[in-house]
Length: 103
Image (tube, rainbow, N blue to C red; front, side, top):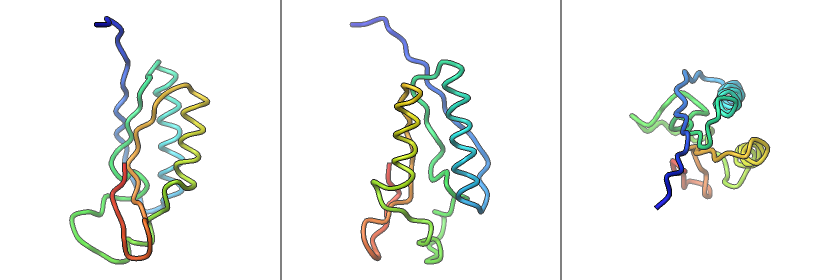
């Protein structure tokens, strides 16, 4: 059994209606956590938008993205650059009409 400890950062952030702005802020928070020696950084659930899971509104399907995709590529590159693990929840579009709260 190892005595090694890991530093984990849990990001809390206010998310607005602009996904690109939310994503950019999340990246800034990840970088900030890494500067404070976090090895694992957890982003809020569905951080790309305001949390919408209390009701089913088909307009929110426009927020879905494919995985792998742009967000996973950017987050993966950042994780490699900072030598950390990033845990992120994304609204996944598996195919037309099939959506998931992906992790």
